[in-house]
Amino acid sequence: MSFRAGPKNLITDVAGLRVGNASDARLKSGTTVVVCDEPAVAGVQVLGGAPGTRETDLLEPHNSVQTINAIVLSGGSAFGLDAASGVQSALREQGIGFEVRGLHIPIVPAAILFDLTNGGDKDWGRHPPYRELGYEAVHAASADFSIGTAGAGTGALTFGLKGGLGSASTVMPDGTVLGALVAVNATGSVTVGGSRHFWAAPFEIGDEFGGLGYPSPLPADASDIRLKFRDQGANTTIAVIATDAVLTKAQAKWLAMAAHDGFARAIWPAHTPVDGDLIFSLATGRSGAAPAPDAAIDLYAAAGATMARAIARGIYAATPAEGDLFPVWLAR
Image (cartoon, rainbow, N blue to C red):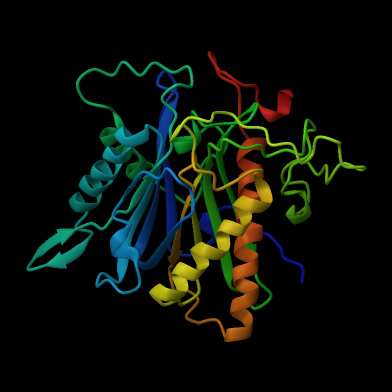
């Protein structure tokens, strides 16, 4: 089965979603928010050993809240969880949220990555800046947004290369749309051995991340384990996989689980004890159609492929900045 990208090749090709970025170049960090135009069914799957999260328990299929209003991906390690409070403030001002006796409570799950030792100035004083970054990100949310050195990917790093914020989309043969958004800060490598070739190459559509394919023959060091940092929690790839299909909470969780295949196909190694690898899922239901059992297999397969492409695109689009610890892919 051949897939094609959506018109923007961004997660916002999924109807009902907007994305906003806010970042601080001096800090070398930032925040990204996915805003749902209407409450969306959501799920989550954590496979890394060092996650930092907020409001993930409520996403389990057996729990009562059925939909959410936004998802936050942020730098800043545990400090970055404050970004969700800023997002809540912005959404509450707009009257958005779970209604309880006349009150609106925005439901905003969040996940963070570690970018505290990337060369940026983290001497922010008494309070970290992430709440304000979250607030700004909501007001920047639109169908068009930057990838690479932007938002939660501003200070991201991988083995030997600058990381970044990536996104990609896929249109299925039946018209169902999938989109992925990812902040790539993995301890592992996104390229094959010492080459410039991306592990995600088999899934590339057109030349969206350079069109190099796989090296032939594979380099002798292709299977070598090359790690950026072995520190607990000093890494992490965090992501969102979204669709316009109608899904239950249980099916949304399966979507998040399946998208982790994209981590494994684009990063070597992935899901380590020192990564907090996590994927949220969203189903906006805008297509009005639920996948048939056979079509669901293709949907879940495409989720992994779309995520792998988004990871490579985030690295490919990264741009250099003063004080960077690692080079960008384009300069390698």
